[in-house]
Image (cartoon, rainbow over all chains, first blue to last red; front, side):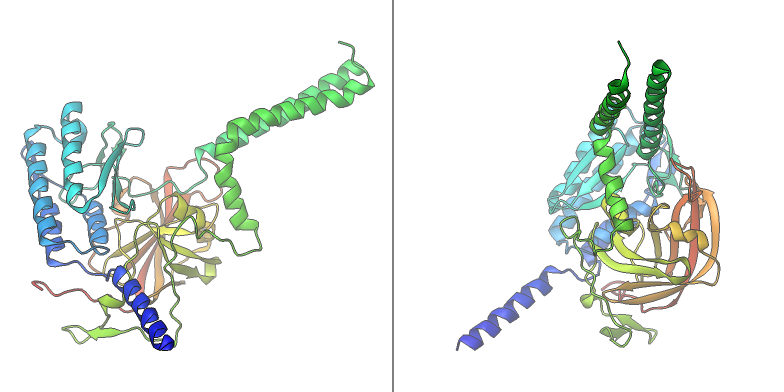
Length: 202
Length: 229
């Protein structure tokens, strides 16, 4: 009897672990949200779009969850509202919006994440928006910008040219450079000190 | 101050201690990642980063078969149900480029932890077999330093828990980091883009990147629901 119970318990544990790993697919509700993200926003009369990289990040996230119809409807409602907000700004791109308009857009973004219990935050130093899932995992990280069809480069909220944060810094960091310079200066200072002492002594 | 025999020894020692104390206080936060990278490069022990990230990679051997289904065109596809799609930050595979001496963990997402422990897929591109662009970043002073030996015709293998994917390098190129024509994230076919900072051995930030473009030559695509399903 004990054997049967332990086999049953083992099978149950395996079943739970399988259920918690989401299969790689985008369900119909998630597809509706993706389709909406691919539609344009009219900015000063020009059709502007989210870069492919942004929509792909959403698709990757959707492959790890199972969105319900109710969640999708709420998200779609807020996305559509956000688009009307963007169009009403009269700006050419997100970077050209006023601080007040950017804050309103950020508040809308927080509402977009609410149905899936996610969070949205803005890093003033890098200009990046980070969206996190209910579990605190990063699901989107980029400098917010819109692009014209076929275009990819734009300016960020700080007015700097950006690709939306696609290509990373993959070299030795500036901090390493500072370390090398300061280290070299320290060696020189020590050598100078020794030289001074020797000179004085001589 | 009288400089005698004792001062000749004591002064340099005080100098050294003072300067190292100041350097330690100022650079301790910066040194931690450098020491971490050095540990990866020079340690002869298997590093344990299990507390830093989740590893979902279970290698599929060459003789093993992954559960597949047949699509409308009669082609086999990896059954979507058996694919555990990686979350941002998960290690879900490894990449091997024998001609470049590269063999390292592959992560979903190219955040700091991923690039300290291996190379990472940009989260705005897709995993191998998904039917799109897979764009992978790595540091030029660690895991992707060997890319300087990359040349057309060489083979790249990506191993995941749902199958192994073999690519052949088509070309390499040096481009500006902000050149958005260097990649196509809207591609509807499996292709691979690797990149790292260029020049390879330059200290400090660089504005250029070294790109490696490769085509898929072997590997089964992941099942996707048909339109309207």
